Length: 360
Image 1: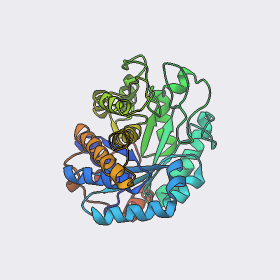
Image 2 (image 1 turned 90 degrees about the horizontal axis):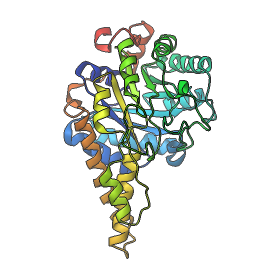
Image 3 (image 1 turned 60 degrees about the vertical axis):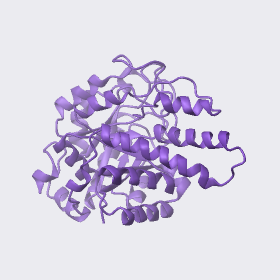
């Protein structure tokens, strides 16, 4: 059994100075490709499912699929994380089905579209943290609203994203408020807003400090050196994948994602979890288009899915290596959730006091 809490995994990453990509999944092929990449380079894994993915796959199917992947790859520590939980019930049911970590995104109200105020965010995130910590599961919170510093709006994806225009105060997490938020909620990880957004169309040009505010990461890390930071919307939308997608019949306008070197910069300043979804979709979709174009009579789904899995496996392995995750799976001794719960109840896992190693 190699299922691990997010808190333990990110504590390990912080102690050794690496980051962990968090890959969104919807089906067996994605799960297999991610685990094959992890096994090839000895990397721990965060797989995350959104509410949309849970609706698509079904909680029972998703839970059994993760059980099977654990059995196939017992040497790989695996965290199953809920991405953008919108209320207490979505977090509670995820934990029921074996998620070892949940995100309570209180930056938006339960409709996942309307920006919430600070007090609402603190209150609901604190309640979810109390619930999850009781059984040893981890909690990620979000302060600030994901959205573009170029056009001032959020991006809808998979049923999540702020509607309408957002202020600079909403689009950039306030470092001093982050300190208060972590103290009040006891979250294990904090997602922050600094100009990234969901989907492929993040930036209309290669991002610089005006539209990708990495300085916010550095300022928050300086104030909260023991708190694990999370970068959402951090697909890089690689140019070769855009070119391949378009070469085989796609119509993706030129776009820019978050450069890998900027993510690595973030890792040097406390970023431990990096959310990646668009890159995974694009890698697989480009492979689908290539098969459909080059083998127009092909109708066997496996002939589409196998090349797509190959493309995703290559992408995941590259991210494991770029973020320093590779080579660390075998160094982690998984702590059971029951022991994590005991440490939470003993007050030994306050997000500002250090790692579970220090709290053991």
